[in-house]
Length: 355
Image (cartoon, rainbow, N blue to C red; front, side, top):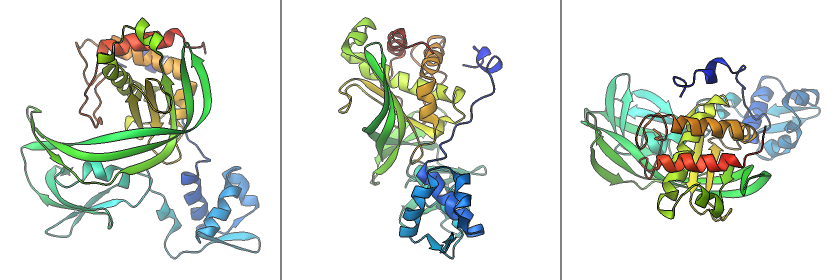
């Protein structure tokens, strides 16, 4: 996109750094880390924002902090800083261990373990290839053996999303643009083996992994039947058009919020049970939210205009990694409908408010 639209890079102001300092999943570990260095006082709480005072009773109840006279003290022997995983979405990092030697090769965050180090996965480390023989989620260990298979592996998953609370809702023509709290349930159900040279699918293996639940923040938009008719979106291509628009919008959001596409996720559904309409969700991939979806909501018009331009200006026939295909799609980039996505976004933007 930037190659064909250099003005998006050179004509823009300094990019916006986005974060949510009141997110309890972020703030609580920082309060603990601060208290472990020097006891926290009432005066110190002003440095952590208005949400800090409400979190302290919860940290006391969890026996992480204890109040003595005028300050809160860290109660554990382990380092409070270890409560925060700066590489991922929290939880204990999964250690990748070579089975024959016990050598630690590295770690992955718990949120990525299901897709990257499941049993049978091909794992690359410093130019060497390993096969995952066993993933122990309880002990957070993946055992691997060096191998040289002629294939790579790609995890396939299912994702559902439910709306917990809508904080803001604005009309976009007949449709709606919303921002609020959601619960995302994801389960890795299988993986594909693809030949390295050609990408040919050699087979699919089922996996028995538990579902994971994430409560986070999301921006979402709906379209009505009249909008679908105006965009000439038939029921046969609706799923592919929504899916393509979802992928492209995730790929374009880093232009408007300082994030990586791996920091955010998306779900598109032809008929969502909470909105009762075709809906596209884009959500923060971090518990409690990280501010990216909020930024998406507030820049929605410019964001979706850029999304439409990225798809429409791509020279491919039916979709490629430069426009609507995603490297992280758990459905193997199916179904996708490029032209349908362009028409859908055109109609959606026709009703978008200015500014």
